[in-house]
Image 1 (tube, rainbow over the protein chains, first blue to last red):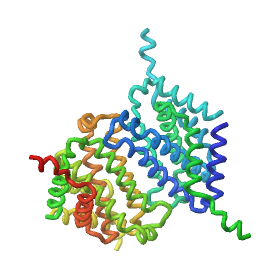
Image 2: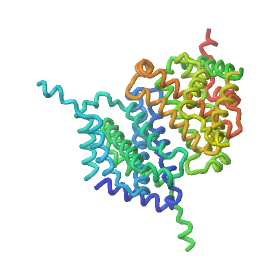
Image 3: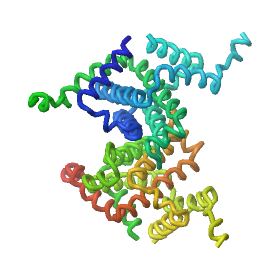
Image 4: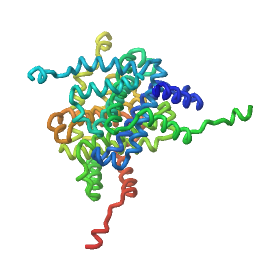
Length: 106
Length: 106
Length: 106
Length: 106
């Protein structure tokens, strides 16, 4: 439910500002890299603990920005982002099988 | 609903492989930048249209990988990612007000 | 000659501020990605021509920042960056041979 | 001397393959971010020491790739990269003054 709400609000935000015309997929991919690095900047010269102690609010906002751009790129590509995650998890499970050897021994 | 399913499956995938112990927040932020650049690589030397024509499947998978890492980072930080997006949209709306000047003229 | 001058000045700059103690290689690699994305930000939503028209000064400065971090990382790793480029060009030449087929036809 | 040799060889490599026509500045900036993340990937889930122990050769090659792209972008922009670094160091020295208070006390 909340993910649908997010999509509606993200796209409404974009459309109220008439930004869709600028939103080609290449620049959206660039934007995701830029936001990912703004997230990462919080951890520069710091341990995870130090970064969270001083910048948790900014970390949360940069994570939100990444998802906002992902939603917009998914809309442009007419794909279902959650469905893609479920598909990718199936693929990853084949690539990285769970090691059940220890359980068998028990 | 599907977002909750995604969270459960992403975290189950991680925990079956006992990977949480390696998942410090700094390396998760690094991972998001790496995946964002794997997404971006599809657009290198290409227009959006060319990239989509030859690499749509990979584009979708890299987008999925980014969301998978976002979900894992949100879990470590104990934050609600969708809630953060809704908060960020409110903040962005103040930063980028809708220009209603044209409507007023009409 | 100028490259040696650059190395001396970059490392003197770092050492006058006693920053070497913070300069682990992982954070230097993070810093290079951050600066590369600050460079890239100049091109977001723009063509190359538009970006250069409005931001050439910043583009130059971000390029300088990337090289400054490369020099510092090379110093920490005790490698000769120019020598590595010459080695890499040899390797790349094998990977991407010059297509001489047209010349042969002539 | 070696930096001039690098420039000549990098640009000759490009021109023998007739790649200059594809080398718009925006895609060169994208390429630098991609290479920076290939460098960073060596440090994912690792300490600096672990990364250097297992991947020093790849680290060196990715650093070389970044400088190769910087040289090509500088050529397209018709700027002198080393000169830009010297200018940037002057600017950084103003931004980050050396704290000489301790020396004064002595």
